[in-house]
View 1 (cartoon, each protein chain N blue to C red):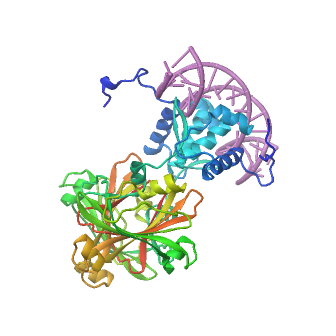
View 2: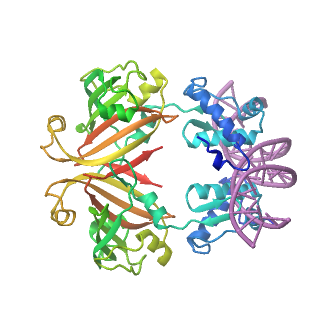
View 3: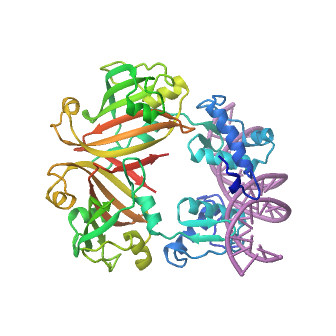
Length: 247
Length: 247
DNA sequence: CAGTGGTCTAGACCACACA
DNA sequence: GTGTGGTCTAGACCACTGC
């Protein structure tokens, strides 16, 4: 059975697998296929879309490369779901002196809903009178507070956040966004600068005033590329560093 | 390396395309296929290796993804060659305030051959009595010196370097390594920290003593993963920043 | 025009997970 | 054993490049 929605001729040529992929991405984005759920087999999908198994396969493989799917021989194809480990592995880049990855503990210092600053509004593509969750937290590695972080996320996207001030966070923010609000962080851009420690860093990181700190400004986006979150992290790099692999 | 306790029911299983790929990577690594040269067609390669076109195709596609090859419909498949633009695009991450990529001008301050320091020897996997080219240079963006950089590369790999002290560099180092010595930089690891400006940075970057600077330590490797070069860059991030895209 | 890589199909068999 | 994804083949046709 041939789906007339799938155009084949030359004008505006677009490969079949790209069209199939678009349809499947849409099913994930709209929640029709939820994170962690099992997809139909390649053969079923091929029948449904009216293409060959090889064509569906190419679409699925690209989506796996993009980390939208997880495929396991003998088991099936699943919609990728953030866990604490996967979220940290892809988005947390701090390592210790030996280059080993370190898992941080996060402690919330403040959590308020307020209007976006001009910088936040510009980065998130929202109006400056729109509301955001404004979170201030420290992240500890080896029991030592090494990062002071300010997070802003529009309440229009993430209505509520179960954060307890003063407590270690049970879940990573990206896990919460996905599990509780159906918003999946798929990519991000980071801008890194060196800055001098100010009063908040002196207080919460225990560094001297004007100590050089690594400032990371990150805009995190969903799978369509729409901005979801802005965070600015100031890191004490005396015992830890930011690691980037260029491939 | 293979533990017999963990040997799998079908020992030594390795996909055909992976074996074909290994043979082709070897031809590039040994210089049998040189950067910029045209490969035989998929059909020819399939006949030569005694496999189907689809199998060769899968090997070629993986190598293209890894940027070892460049493929052009209607023209053919070529061995990837660094140009100033591609080298900078993949390895130079500094952007201006608007997030636009900037091309630097490099000016050599010193170039000597000396014994490796202990740190250099460890990073490059060479003996501490081995010789390296030790290069000190500034990199300018918009006419302003923003990076002071120390490069170390073993003379065992790169015998000679045509650098003129005080002059802007005509070619990127990675282009020289590949064109003149057959050494292709394929990947790198970078470690970023914030540090305080010392006397050399005060002199060459025109910053105040103890100004926070972004320090980037990079180990660059060839396509087999062997370390080729160590460079430590100290960057004034007042008007420029390091950009990283997480996908 | 001929030759290249890119897409698509159909079918066979293999490796793997799980009941 | 059954069903899944992974590999491999053979062949057709399409889009693109350059002579």
